Every structure is written in structure tokens, then in C-alpha cells.
Image 1 (tube, rainbow, N blue to C red):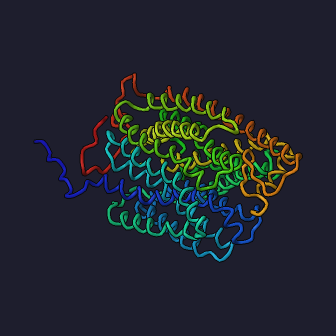
Image 2 (image 1 turned 180 degrees about the vertical axis):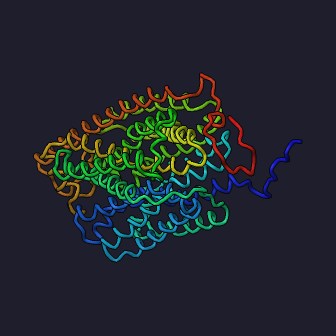
Image 3 (image 1 turned 120 degrees about the vertical axis):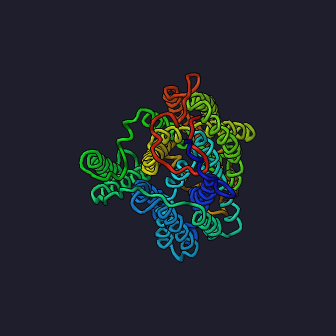
Length: 528
């Protein structure tokens, strides 16, 4: 006798409810990663803080994200993924509200830490719930659609932040999270189903302690490396503490812990390891270089934060269009062709960016950024879904936590390396000029572009000569930094070609043997 098919739920299928809930929740968190950067100088002025102390407004958020992300999978397995996801969103929302009302610098820093903790918990669990809700034949499409939020939100941040700062409404860069967050929490509370590991993991204090110290120390060292220098004793000390703690963490996880915090044994899976390696290299090739263009536009070309955000918008538009299409293609042909095409485009694009000069037209830069968005859409979520596709279904939360936390570290170190390459191209005279010219009062400098300067009064010939030298050194630094990311893109291309997919036969995730148990009440889980 053939068993009856599971009954369909009335209304919208559960998988789409999960997608809608997660997009609204995670969009709020991702938006905040860039919207605050635009207001940094305004916040510094508002609280009368120096550059070192005010830098904690940004650094503490990054540290909190990096520390809490490895904990998310463990907490989900122990207490339930829906409950912990909602806890993460709520914590982020409370942090946003407190940040908006912050009466002083260190109050704001503490509130930003709450935001980072909540965001670090919510981001990997959102991806995990989405992956578990869709059948194998549609997981690429699901994470592709979800990728629109991941890629568009950071691009909207500078535009939205610039508009609010220009209107002297800096507190609203935090208050805008409130309605989005309430909607995300409401949808998640109503739509999501609770799911937890039937064998709740045991709390492992050694893993938690070494994880917090390890990830926190490495991220802190990376955040100060460009300013202090990689040979600085402070940087070396924090890197040493971080890597030593992470080594102890790995040994404890692999050989002693009965309930590992991160499932490091997933790296023994061939496709998970290869896709993760491609993802790490692509982070350097893509995101590691994304901080270079805003610096070029603002420091060299004198564009405002709002203008810079608008110039960067084509990257988000093409990435937002390409990502769901790439997800659908992944379901049909696998990752190899997508990654080969994406990293091939990225190599050409990065080489072109390494050739930009002080007078490159903005129209040409817009085209290059749009092309870069195409590469972004083809690669970022493709490597993520490929790695997660090799994880048993009951281990998706841990797998997502592992991928996100390790990528986060690689991204932070990559940005620090590129910032060091850029800073290493500047002579001491130019660094002094940068401090006096770019941070001068508004009465002295009307436009701060080193390559398009408009200085009040009549600058001396010596000053003009030094400004031209600064422009040339910066352009040379950008060329070297982008060339480094070109080689990273080449390495990512070679690694991506080792993954499965067209022109070889693509069997899809459903036939890899890693599916495990799952709850698919909407439709059966079939291969691509």
C-alpha cells in the first residue's frame, strides 16, 4: 500500500514563510555594518572624542560579532534554533535602541557591543533555518534570494547613513532598525517552527573560553595592525594570544570535548573543505578589497559619504540581480561553472581596478563596480551553499556557525593586510599631510580630495607639490592592493574548478548522502 502524501498547509508554504522572516531579520543586522561607518566623524565630533577612543564604536561591533558567531550553533542545538534566533534579533534591537539614546561615547560603545552579540547569533542561524526549510533541489535558489539582503543592505547603508548625517539626524541611523527589527521578530515568532537537537549538547567551558579569547584576540589584533604595524609588539602579542587560544580550542574540540562548540570534523568532508577554502580566498578577493574604493572616492576624489554610496550602488544592483539567478543555476548545474565564470570576471575586473588613476572617469568606475557586482553574485552564496550542502541536516546550524565565524576572521585579516599595503605606500611626509589636510577644520578645507583639492586661500607651491605627491603615492598604493586581490581571485578560480558540477554530471545535494533527517511538510526532498 502506497503511503499517503503529507498534507499541504493552507496558505503560503512554510519554506517561503521562513525566507520572508529571515530576510527581514538579517537585513536589519547587515544594514548596520555599513550605515554607522558613514557617521563615524559625526559621532566623534558629537562626543568630543579622539580617534583612538572613538574607533571603538566600530571595533567593538566587529569584536562582538566575531565572538558570538561561534556560539550560535551550540546555543541553537541546546535551547532551540527559533528561540536563540529570536534572542539574537531582540538583543540587536535593544542595542540599537540604546545606541540611539546614547548620552556619551562609552555608553554607545557598550550598546554597540550588544548589537554585535545579537547580530553574531542571528546571522548564521538565519542561513541554517533557510537551508533546512527548502528541499535540496531548491536550496541554491533559497540562499540566492536570501543573498539579495546580504549584498544590497551593505550598499544601502552608506546612502541611508549619508542622508541622515547630512540632515543632522545621526541618532536615526540606530532608530531605523526599530521598525525593521520589530517586523522581523514578529514574522519569525509567528512563522518559524522550533527545532532543536534531540540530544542537547553539554556546556563545555573550556571550548567557550578558548573560543572567546581566540576569536576576540585575533580580530582585535587585525583591527589595529594597519595603524600599529604588523611588527608592533602589541599586535604580535594579541595575535600570539589569539592563535594560541584557537590552537587549544581546536585540540579540545577534536580530542576532548564530548559536545564540540564548532564541528571542526566537517573539514574532513571533501566538498565542505574545498568550498570553505574557496570561500576564504574569495572573501579576500571580494570583500577585502571593497573598503579600497570608498577610500579612493573620498580621500582622493573628494566625494562625500552620500556621493560615495551612490557611486557604489551599481555593485549592489548587479549583485542583487545575479545572486538569485546564480542560485537557480546552482540547483541545475552545480557550483563549478558558476565559480569559474565569477572568478574569471573578478580577475579581469580587479586588474582593471588596479589600473585606475587620479583622473579616471566616474562613469568608467560605475561600470567596473557593476561588473564586480556580477562576480559577487556568482560566487559568494555559491561557495556558502556548496559547503553547507555537504553537512548533515541535523548539523546545519553548527556548519553555518563554523563557516561564518572562520570567514569573518579571514575577512578581518584580509582587510588589515590590504590596509597595510595601502599605508605602506605612503611616505612620512604624506602621512603628516593626511592628518593636517584631511582632518583640518571645514573653514580651511572645502573639499578634501587629495587629487581634486579645493583649499581655502592660496596654498604655497610647496603645499601643492606635497599634495600632488600624496595623490601619486595613494594611486600607487591602490594599484598594489588591487593587484594582490587579483592573485587571490586567480587562486579562488583554480580552487573553484576542483568543485563538482557542469560539465561533469551534477547529482545535486539530495544524492550526496549528507541529507540526514529534516522536516519538509511542504514537498518531498528530491535531488536537483
